[in-house]
Amino acid sequence: MIKKNGTREEFNREKILRGLIRAAEKRPVGADEMSKIVDEVENKVRGLGENEVSSQIIGEYVMNLLAKVDEIAYIRFASVYRQFKDMNVFMKELKDMMAKEKDTKKTTTGKDKNDGGEA
Image (tube, rainbow, N blue to C red; front, side, top):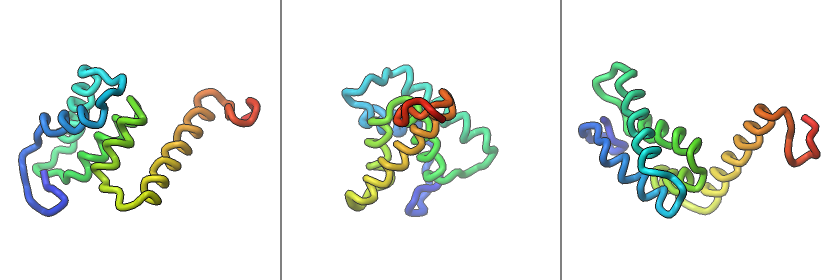
């Protein structure tokens, strides 16, 4: 794995799991779910068939999977991983997430719950 600063280290499942555990602290995310996320990330990385993969790609995989499991844990993980510099960047991430959720609800139900049910 190639880190942001250019250094290289082995893929470390435990490091990813520790990050997930911190992000999901006091959230309804079980150890099995976190382990499945790590398994899926590891499978995706191996599936790339590359000798080296950037930590950025791995982090994006983790965030995409975590967002599907628990939004609060996702925001916590993203805030550390992306090192939000100020509240504006953090708020943009929240707004983007809310827009994705709204689009997903429209797509799956055919309704926008905020507009009385018309798509």
